[in-house]
Length: 630
Ligand SMILES: NC(=O)C1=CN([C@@H]2O[C@H](COP(=O)(O)OP(=O)(O)OC[C@H]3O[C@@H](n4cnc5c(N)ncnc54)[C@H](O)[C@@H]3O)[C@@H](O)[C@H]2O)C=CC1
Ligand SMILES: O=C(O)C(=O)COP(=O)(O)O
Image (tube, rainbow, N blue to C red):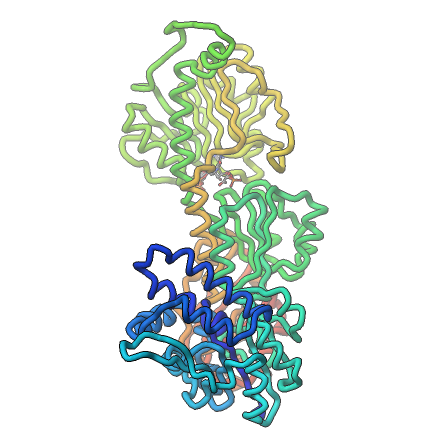
């Protein structure tokens, strides 16, 4: 920090997220039937003035006349504005307080609401330059002090000339009038602040675009809350992830790019190069080959359950944690499974088709109730177990088989082998995961073991069932119904055609991988996954990561957090601590967890530390990734 630096900061849409006069109008015109119309007019005038297309004095006059506010509305306005402080200003309150003597608020707004807001953030009242309202005897706002230089065109430049501040002066604002100060040669640099609004003509003129205060502080080596400005974290969301994920991640300050479908390897290799976080669903293949191009990747998020499309080991070796949403869409899959079982046991898919062809075939042949039938669930995980509970309540006699020991819920019966389950049950539902070993798990031999007249449901992964074998067993009549939602090859987007040897078979439900595609599930996922990502970026927590040792970390207080990811070889923790001791660094807290591939060590150290240690920790043999959280 250089003490001769001066920071001039705009208020409306910069210090706060909103234009205060627009907000005042919402309050003062609350009961006016023409409120919407007048508010729109006010916003329009504000925009014209901010874009430099309308003389300021006129715009102020027009707006004040339209707002029709009274002193009593100002208290409410101040309450509203306090809730609308720009997120990055809130985050960097220490910067504002520590540099109060160097910060000035220069605004075409009004002192009556600016001072109560900014002084809470350490800004000196004497450093606030803005307009003042004039009131009549009833306290109505009837005008403003016209002798204030800030009411004139180019008022900010005139004011700064008069103030004659000495030092390197930096202007941060969102409006054209902020840029004018730079044009007049009165500040060293103008930073267009785009966290709340982006004005093209202002951005074009700026020396730098600063999407948040973090970026400004980073450029000036003054960031105290973050090791890296969030706007530099680029997120790529593929496969139609629910829009609320983008909203949340943008609110956090990240730059978020979206793409509708999945990408093939070549496209992905190109696009992933400068991406920090990638969000995918079940289709995008994140292979070793693709990851080699992901030079800036810090985390992967699967906005679904399955992670078989991701090379988890390759991610771990690069120090990239992978997160998923293990619960959010489970209920949706279970509901579809139950619906499909009922339809298949009643032969409904064929009946529907016949009806559409004009054929009335009322008959009970091969139609059954589900009550008392034996349902065999393969893979008794989050979905399998939930299905068992609901199915039992509907009258099924439920059996399950899993490769690991699982707690049987309700009255379900555990089978000791796959064969036992296949021989016992007439309805088979697959809910195992898509690990490579599960390829063709249900093959010719397994179909042979099933009872005549069985029904099979696959809502897990396409490669788990050998489709040739399934087709033959359907054609032979051994399998009397099948519902298939997942396929070894699936179209990348909704524009590609679907091909399968199962098309046209009797009593077969084919669905386009929609087990988890309900609005509820997608919204839940879009809430859950960004939270995990943000926790990881902000605290280092890896709870629910599917390839990283899981560490739930406390929020950092008055300390630096050193995050060290290394190959899991013996002795690294001792070496880290030796280095810390050598530099006489006090450890406030330390957390270590390992898995077969990597070790994850978090060390919270005292605020004052010798920065040369950073380099030494980075160079420690076996280090994969190292970062410091301020
Ligand atoms: N169709 C769709 O839209 C959706 C499909 N899925 C698929 O469903 C799968 C299961 O989901 P969850 O229950 O949440 O996963 P989970 O991980 O909780 O359960 C999977 C269970 O399968 C068991 N398992 C794995 N291999 C097995 C084998 N060969 N034989 C027997 N058991 C085996 C595991 O031990 C585990 O208990 C996901 O991995 C995903 O591939 C999940 C959500 C939506
Ligand atoms: O959650 C899963 O594993 C699924 O299969 C759902 O995948 P999707 O998000 O629909 O591509």
